[in-house]
Length: 331
Image 1 (cartoon, rainbow, N blue to C red):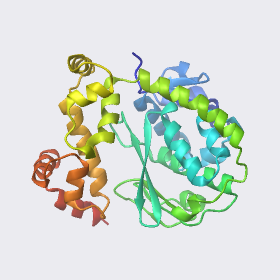
Image 2: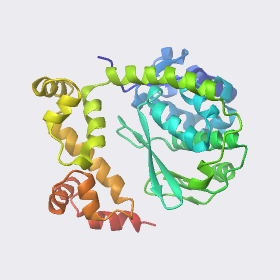
Image 3: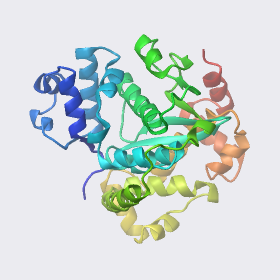
């Protein structure tokens, strides 16, 4: 079974590296990676991908993510991103990027409503460290470039939260309010601007690409690890109550014993995955001040608020209320 921890390095990435006047071999060596990844459509792990971006920052500076994105040619983008450029609206395009992101990298774009905005944060499933700042800059600028190109408007009603320090290049590109040295990286898109139509909407082309990409996505999910499948199902079903191994196994069309054996062979267990998933979601929900603690306990599938409090105390060694206060009041 193939591992899902693979990031595709598309042709457009290497073309941009060439335009930056960076030697591919120099970049790869500095990242400590095998020279073979310099070939078209090579695949690297998340750790290797981060190493490439850290090497880029060493060679070209902290703002290389913005510089690289301005050099990309949209006509050479992979189909999983190209389809978004021909969507009906900015929202329609964003939903396609979110859906097909897995075909390029084990990265999730998480969306949540935050007043008049849709908040976007990135989650690298297999990352042990936060993503390089330049990579986050590139991700967020690619979304804004998509919206500006598609709608042919400047998209001024946006805002950013970034873990990195202040940067003139970032300010010049986004032209929006930015909170520097933030707790997390987040891009906020105005809900009204998300309804703007795309000038080059092509229903026939998007339909054709959607069909092909959905087939690829189905194949990807079929080949992904059982750990990844279980985590995905848990995120979908937690609000229905405490999830059971029996129900998850039934969804995967596999016996409980076989599922336990598969998870064990991948170095985990159902209870460990359940706890990790709840922990991850709890931190995300607590960052949203609009959620009551009782509501978060329900969304995580706990029978009562006290059970959630005990679990959170074990994870963070602090109560959820105090953790939220510390995060929301930071800075």
